[in-house]
Image (tube, rainbow, N blue to C red; front, side, top):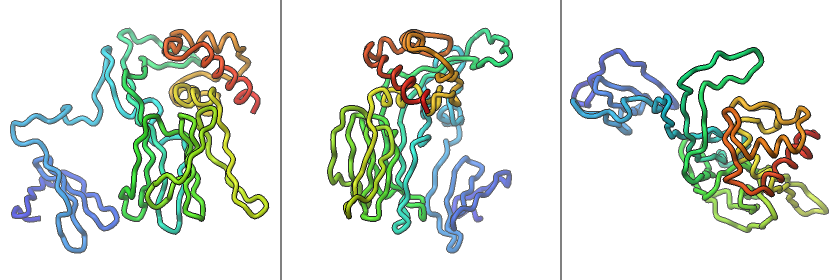
Length: 290
C-alpha cells in the first residue's frame, strides 16, 4: 500500500475481508474500504488529526459509574425478539427494530451476591426521551438498506412477507398495516382496539387470502417496558428480572409494577391504574396459562 494512496499502515492492525471488500486502518486511525479486484478506495473514514480530540475517548460506549449515563440501544436492544421476514425473490430482509435510550449506573457500594439471587450491580431506567421505531428492508446481497421507515413508537411486532409482494407489520399504536414490499408504501391499514405486538398469520380461506392478528393493551405495555427484564414468556429475561408466572397473584404484580423495587423502576407515574391492571391480566391470563 503506497503512501500516495494515503496509507501508512503500521502493520499492527488486522485486515478484514468481506464480500469482495477489504477494510484496513492506518497509523492515523483512518479506515479504508478497498475493492479487492481493482484496488479502488471505495470510501475512507478519517480519524482525529494530530492533537485533535477523539470523540468519547475512542470508546464505543460511554463508561458509566454512579452517575447515570444515557446509552443506545436501550435495554430492549435494537433488532431483538421481533421476527424478521425474508423475500427470496428480491433478497430483501424486513427488520423490525426499537430505537430507545436507556440510562445506566453502578451502585457505589457493590453488595455481595447471594446464592440463587439476581445480581445487577447497578440500575437501569428508561431515559427521558421519546421512543422511536425502525422498520427497514435490508438487501442481504449488498448489505445496503433498500428502504427504511422511522416510527414514533417502537417496532415490536415483527413482520410477515407474502408471495404477492405485501409485507404485514403491526404497530404499537393499534394499527395493522399492509406495505408494498418493494418500497414500503402503505397499501392499507386497519385500526384495532390495542397495540399490535404479535406477528400476523396469513392463510387461505375459500380461495381468498386472509390475515389474523392478536391485539391487546396489556400485551402492548408488556412488550414496551417488561419484556427486556422478564422475557417474552414471563419466565425471566436477560435483563435479570425474575419469573412472573411462578404463582404470583394479581395484587402482587400490580403493586410491584407501580412502585420502585430493587433494580426495577416504578411505572405508577407513567401508566394509569387501569393500564397496570391490563398488564397484570395479560401476565396471569395469557403468559401463566401457556
